[in-house]
Length: 138
Image 1 (cartoon, rainbow, N blue to C red):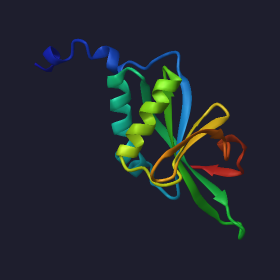
Image 2: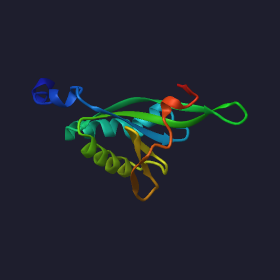
Image 3: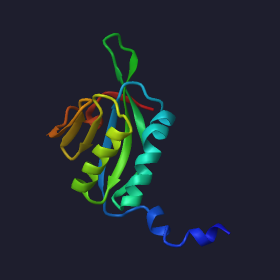
Image 4: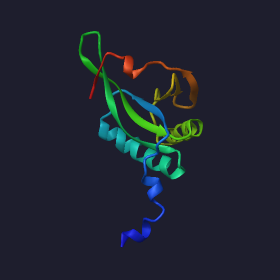
Protein backbone atom coordinates (compact mmCIF):
# COMPACT_ATOMS: atom_id res chain seq x y z
CA UNK A 1 0.00 0.00 0.00
CA UNK A 2 2.71 2.52 0.95
CA UNK A 3 4.50 1.82 -2.34
CA UNK A 4 2.13 4.16 -4.15
CA UNK A 5 3.62 7.07 -2.19
CA UNK A 6 7.26 6.13 -2.76
CA UNK A 7 7.86 6.80 -6.49
CA UNK A 8 10.12 9.81 -6.80
CA UNK A 9 11.36 9.64 -3.21
CA UNK A 10 14.33 7.41 -4.03
CA UNK A 11 16.39 10.43 -5.06
CA UNK A 12 15.67 12.16 -1.75
CA UNK A 13 16.72 9.11 0.23
CA UNK A 14 19.93 8.43 -1.70
CA UNK A 15 23.26 9.59 -0.30
CA UNK A 16 24.88 12.21 -2.55
CA UNK A 17 28.30 11.24 -3.88
CA UNK A 18 30.21 14.46 -4.60
CA UNK A 19 29.91 16.51 -1.41
CA UNK A 20 31.69 19.04 0.78
CA UNK A 21 32.17 17.90 4.38
CA UNK A 22 30.91 20.43 6.91
CA UNK A 23 30.77 20.23 10.70
CA UNK A 24 28.27 22.04 12.88
CA UNK A 25 29.64 22.54 16.41
CA UNK A 26 27.14 23.22 19.18
CA UNK A 27 28.92 24.56 22.29
CA UNK A 28 28.70 22.81 25.63
CA UNK A 29 27.32 19.50 26.78
CA UNK A 30 24.69 18.16 24.39
CA UNK A 31 23.73 14.50 24.40
CA UNK A 32 23.96 12.88 20.91
CA UNK A 33 20.25 12.03 21.04
CA UNK A 34 19.40 15.65 21.91
CA UNK A 35 21.65 16.91 19.08
CA UNK A 36 19.95 14.58 16.60
CA UNK A 37 16.42 15.30 17.88
CA UNK A 38 16.79 19.09 18.06
CA UNK A 39 18.78 19.64 14.89
CA UNK A 40 19.86 16.56 12.95
CA UNK A 41 16.56 15.08 11.82
CA UNK A 42 15.18 18.46 10.74
CA UNK A 43 18.32 19.61 8.98
CA UNK A 44 18.68 16.26 7.19
CA UNK A 45 15.07 16.31 5.96
CA UNK A 46 15.25 19.93 4.78
CA UNK A 47 18.61 19.46 3.04
CA UNK A 48 17.33 16.37 1.22
CA UNK A 49 14.09 18.06 0.14
CA UNK A 50 16.06 21.06 -1.15
CA UNK A 51 18.52 18.76 -2.94
CA UNK A 52 21.45 20.35 -1.10
CA UNK A 53 22.82 17.40 0.85
CA UNK A 54 22.37 15.32 3.98
CA UNK A 55 23.34 15.32 7.61
CA UNK A 56 23.55 12.83 10.42
CA UNK A 57 25.94 11.43 12.92
CA UNK A 58 28.61 13.34 14.71
CA UNK A 59 30.36 13.21 18.02
CA UNK A 60 30.69 14.77 21.45
CA UNK A 61 34.08 16.44 21.87
CA UNK A 62 35.52 16.44 25.37
CA UNK A 63 38.69 18.32 26.30
CA UNK A 64 40.89 18.26 29.38
CA UNK A 65 40.35 21.10 31.83
CA UNK A 66 43.08 22.61 34.02
CA UNK A 67 42.48 19.93 36.67
CA UNK A 68 42.99 17.13 34.15
CA UNK A 69 39.31 16.20 34.01
CA UNK A 70 37.48 15.50 30.76
CA UNK A 71 34.74 18.09 30.16
CA UNK A 72 32.28 18.39 27.26
CA UNK A 73 33.40 21.11 24.85
CA UNK A 74 30.95 20.77 21.98
CA UNK A 75 28.66 18.42 20.09
CA UNK A 76 29.46 17.96 16.41
CA UNK A 77 26.88 17.27 13.70
CA UNK A 78 28.24 15.99 10.37
CA UNK A 79 26.81 17.58 7.21
CA UNK A 80 27.50 16.78 3.55
CA UNK A 81 26.64 19.54 1.07
CA UNK A 82 26.48 19.16 -2.71
CA UNK A 83 26.68 22.95 -3.26
CA UNK A 84 28.81 24.57 -0.57
CA UNK A 85 27.67 28.20 -0.86
CA UNK A 86 23.96 27.49 -1.23
CA UNK A 87 24.15 24.74 1.40
CA UNK A 88 25.88 26.99 3.94
CA UNK A 89 23.27 29.72 3.49
CA UNK A 90 20.54 27.11 3.87
CA UNK A 91 22.13 25.66 7.03
CA UNK A 92 22.55 29.11 8.58
CA UNK A 93 18.87 29.90 8.05
CA UNK A 94 17.68 26.50 9.22
CA UNK A 95 19.87 26.39 12.35
CA UNK A 96 18.78 29.90 13.37
CA UNK A 97 15.12 28.95 12.90
CA UNK A 98 15.70 25.83 15.02
CA UNK A 99 17.05 28.04 17.83
CA UNK A 100 20.73 27.12 17.80
CA UNK A 101 22.67 28.44 20.76
CA UNK A 102 25.05 31.40 20.77
CA UNK A 103 28.49 30.22 19.70
CA UNK A 104 27.25 27.60 17.24
CA UNK A 105 29.83 27.16 14.47
CA UNK A 106 29.50 25.88 10.92
CA UNK A 107 33.01 24.76 9.93
CA UNK A 108 34.14 24.09 6.36
CA UNK A 109 37.57 24.05 4.76
CA UNK A 110 39.69 26.44 6.87
CA UNK A 111 36.74 28.77 7.60
CA UNK A 112 33.75 28.93 9.91
CA UNK A 113 30.47 30.80 10.29
CA UNK A 114 29.67 31.81 13.89
CA UNK A 115 26.21 32.55 15.36
CA UNK A 116 26.12 35.34 17.96
CA UNK A 117 22.44 34.96 18.75
CA UNK A 118 21.30 37.60 16.28
CA UNK A 119 23.43 37.23 13.16
CA UNK A 120 25.91 34.92 11.48
CA UNK A 121 29.52 36.08 11.14
CA UNK A 122 30.59 34.34 7.95
CA UNK A 123 33.85 33.04 6.57
CA UNK A 124 35.97 33.72 9.65
CA UNK A 125 39.20 31.76 10.22
CA UNK A 126 38.53 28.53 12.11
CA UNK A 127 38.68 28.99 15.88
CA UNK A 128 39.56 25.33 16.38
CA UNK A 129 40.12 22.17 14.39
CA UNK A 130 38.65 19.09 16.02
CA UNK A 131 41.37 16.94 14.47
CA UNK A 132 44.07 18.95 16.28
CA UNK A 133 42.52 18.99 19.77
CA UNK A 134 43.72 16.72 22.57
CA UNK A 135 40.25 15.28 22.96
CA UNK A 136 38.34 12.18 23.86
CA UNK A 137 35.81 11.26 21.18
CA UNK A 138 32.56 9.81 22.51
